[in-house]
Each structure stands twice: as C-alpha cells, then as structure tokens.
Image (cartoon, rainbow, N blue to C red; front, side):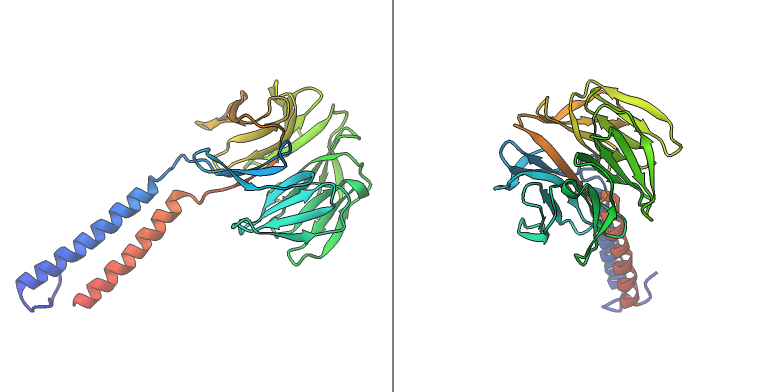
Length: 314
C-alpha cells in the first residue's frame, strides 16, 4: 500500500498506484512481445559464392543481400565474438577482417594458400595454411605461431570443439586429425575418400563431409563412427546454427542445404536453404541472441523501475 501520494489524498494514492500498475503492465507486455519475437528465426549466414567472387548475407528471414564483392580466390570464413567476419584469400595469402559495417582491413599477411578458418574459446584464429602444410594460430593481437605441421597441401576442413580440440581434414592423406590444445595429434579416421567440411554439434560430435562417397559421417567423442546422411554430392563446408540445424554447401547442387533439427532430432535428409548459386563455398553463421535474453533484460529493468517508483511515492 502507498502511504503518501503526491496530493496527500486517497485519490492521489489511487492515481499513483494505478499509474505504477499501468507502468508495470506495459513493461510486462513489452517483455512478452519481445520474448515471442521471431522465436524460431534463423541466424545470419555469410556465404562465399566463388562464381561471382562475392560474399552474400542471408538475414533471419532468408533474404539475400551482397555483403562484399571484388574477392580474388576466396577460401574460408569465420566470425569472432564481436561479429567481425574473417576471410581467407587463398591466392593472395591474406586474411581480411570485415567489420559489421562491411569495412575491410588486412588482419594477417604472408600466408601461403590459406583455406579454412576457425576460432577457439580464447579468440585465437586457426588457419589451414596449405602452402606450408601446417596449421597457423593467430592470437587476438595478430601474433602468429605454427600450431601443427607435417600435414599435406590439400587441407579442406577445420573446426574446433568446446574443449578447444582442433579437427582437420587432410584430403591428400585421406584422414581426419584431432589436435589437443597442446598440439598433440591423434587420428580420428583414415582411409577416407576425400574428407572435406567439418563441424561439431553441441555434444561435441564431429560431422564430416566425405566427397568420394557423397555422405556425411558422425564421429562421437568416444570414437564411434556412423553414417549420418547420403546423397550429399560434394559437401564442401559444414556448420551448425544456434537452433541445431546443420548446413552444408554443395557445389554440385549449387546450393546451401540444411538438415533441420526438430523435436530433438536432426533430420538426415537435406532441403535447399539457398539456391541459384554459381559456386557456393565457405560460410559462417552468426547467432541471433535468444529472444528470451531480451525479455529478461526488459523485465529486469522493469523491476528496477517499479521498485524505484514505489520508493519515490512513499
């Protein structure tokens, strides 16, 4: 109950209480509205289309715009925590960084045929450097070291799990390697017919695109291997979005395809997500913050405002 009103009367107390209730109700409505805002929306996807040497951006509705053009011989893409996009220019030996506004600056030079890119939890960028048959690690300050060597010149897939283990597809050696954070190497699989794109899900299961057998295989952390999907033709790159959907770029279908996650199950049949591409290649997925986080923020602010007004009205 409000002990004092602005007018010092019962009507004033009622009006003050009514105003506060309306304020709180309004905050609740806004919070609920935001919580329901595009709850099933996809993330933002950046895709290299090598046929036109452009980077396309697909928003949460799937609408496409051109994010950047004038590329040379584009390789892998990766996003950092701040939303900056990194592109490996294979022929130029350069990694460019694009700010959220599209402005491009060189991030690393002097590489030899860099291909796939991936970030670990510490913000280090890992790069497949085909010309030196190694994996380079670039710290946030730009300093570069060799993380792993003794590979081949046909490195085609790179991903990092939640424990900062680095996985690499070596198509020439027909193998997938796992590198622990200390750089020690083990073999995940060998004798493969063209291992290509790699991705890990939320349980750290490794998904690998196999070009020669037109399939995607799963390797669990315990080492179990199963065939997840067939008929994927040329699975160049793989990645998961924040909703658990698996995306695959395929140069044969000329499309970005998706294996949808629904009801706790990832479908083993793909459907086209974006078609009409001349040569879809690497892509990177930027998560959209969960709507619940916005609503919680609004409701938290609402609580603070409500308490402050109650104190002021006393």
